Length: 286
Image 1 (cartoon, one colour):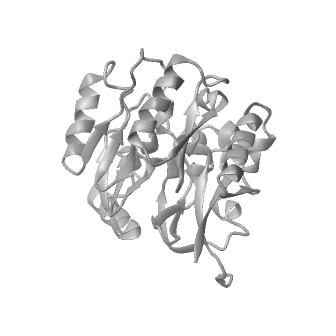
Image 2 (cartoon, one colour):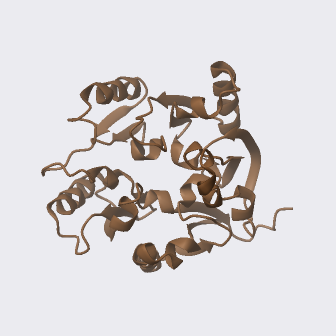
């Protein structure tokens, strides 16, 4: 028997500007009867980036070396780099593999037997040849690797802000480049359409510079936690996004979460949450 537990860093709750987001996530999970816990040994609240990535849905994970260049290349940001082993202390987590490459959990979108990431992974591991790195990743993750071009306007180079998996070989593609960076958007479509049926995200309203945030939702077994821009969830973009996601996920409860404090920092709900599959009654791993 297994259950899903959603983790957030305790820093999400103890940081003044994001405490309201932490409370909303916790209260929503409680109402949905999904267990919520906090990670204690963390140096920032973007826990998606430094926690192990899930390989199989039965709770098998892989570790990696978390040393993002956007933090590592300037010593003043080193205190924000979380040690993955420290963050995992106290978790009965099964990690039979360690990729032993520089990696970032935000640059990982699992799609069944395929994994999407941006080609920033190549720049982060310059000592590896392209062929050897891809082969190693495929063996470690038990998946075909699909590389998307890195939008260098995003210093993190994360794939989870670009696409999400809808199941049954369907991909949901963010629309934030469609009008401003048409050539880049066409490249994404061409790559993805070779592997998936692509659903392009559309909203029946005017563009907003922060509309990218809606794709950074958290999918639960019975609900979608949707990041929103307005405190009262009443701005035109939020209303349009809720309608869009209600149509995309007709069997799920759409729960809007005010997330502007996160969005202002470049992330949203998916970035600050991590799914842990706990096997109930399983002896502690040694």
